[in-house]
Each structure stands twice: as structure tokens, then as C-alpha cells.
Image (tube, rainbow, N blue to C red; front, side):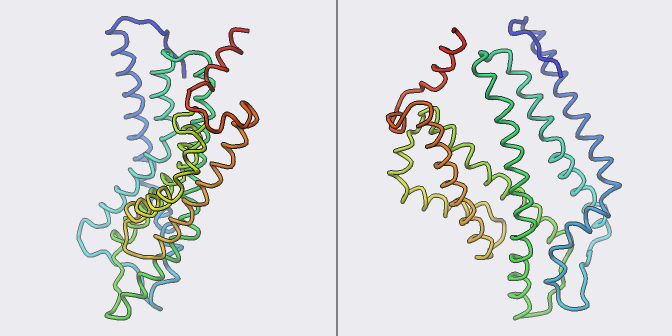
Length: 265
């Protein structure tokens, strides 16, 4: 997708913005239509990790006359937006890229790729490990006080929200990396405040999990802690390799400045 020039008249900028928004909207609409006809397969995929937890001989139920259409359309538009996310992010970045310096642009593509990969790793991790364990616990709790009649829309909505929550949570390493590498928050500050950060991550884990299951909360918290520590380890390696150990406590944004010096050379 072409990138416009850095300097344009105001109305040309507005025209460029309208063009890119049109591409985004049309792409999402087309993807939604395609996904709508593929929803029976998508629903089977989403049901697969939950089915083993259902009471023997039971299946999902739909309790409203428009329930089937609502479920299919809701899943179609959510999946379409997720599928189009890389393209949407690129359209946004392509609009702002002309205003960035060459040394700043070099970070854009790796950042988008890393963010996309981390998001989908979080979604897959949730689908493979969190959804089966979480729904087994929730259905088990229901079975102790009554008969579980799993309503399809309710279960699918919770599952999709869980996967989106884990996908977003898996962006944590990228945020920590850039904050520390660009010395917005020094590496040593992250290490010194680890007790507070661990408590904050526990609160965030409890907030972004859409169910009350302690299983999903603990899995989310463990994943965020692991990703946080991995991000700090990678950050330490990068900063020490580029600036030496003195860079770990740096408080000035000298990472991009070094890149500018290299570009000038």
C-alpha cells in the first residue's frame, strides 16, 4: 500500500484519511459477509474445547427465535475484525508514517509484526489451555446446584472475550520492552518496583477476565508474570549490548539518538 508524501495540503490529508477509512470499512464488511457463511465451521471450532466439559449427552441450546442469526452475525464480525487487524493497523500507520523520521520508521514494521504475533499467540494459548480448564470449572460449579443447560450465545461470547483478553495481555512484553529500551522507564526502575508491578498485574488479570473463575485468573496472572520477566530479560540483553550496563539505569531517550547518529554517518 503506497505511503503519501510528508507534506500535503490540509484537504489532501483529509482525502487521504477518507480513502484509508473507506478501505478499512469495505474490507471489514466483505470479511464479515464471508465469515457469516463460514460460521457453522467457526462455531464447531469454538465449541470443540468446551464440549468435553458438558454433562454427558447434553449439547448447547439457543433460547430465542433470532438467536441463531445473532450468534452467527456476532461471530462473523468479531472474526472479520480480528482478521483485518493487521491491515487496519497498517492503514493507520501508513497515514502517519510520512511524519516520522527514517530512524523512527525502521521500528514500525517490526513492532507491527511483533504485536500481531503476540496477539495471536495469546489467542491460541487461551483456546488450547484456558478455555477447557475454565469452562470445566464453571460447568462443574453449576452442576453442583442444578442442571447445566449451556446457552450457546452466552458461552461463545465468554470464550471470545477470554481469547481477546489473553491476546491483549500478551502485548505486555512489547510495552515493557519499548518503555525500558527508550528509557521512558529505566530497566532498574522496573526491577526496583517489582512488588507493586506484581500486584498491579494481579488486579489487571482479575479485571480483564470476563468470568469469575479463579482458574482463568490464575492462568492469566501466571502468563502475564512470565511474559513480563521474559520481556525484562530481552530488554536487559538489548540495552547492555547497545549501551553497556550503564544504560540499564539511563533516564534519557538516547536509543533513537544513536540511530540518528548512524543515519548521519
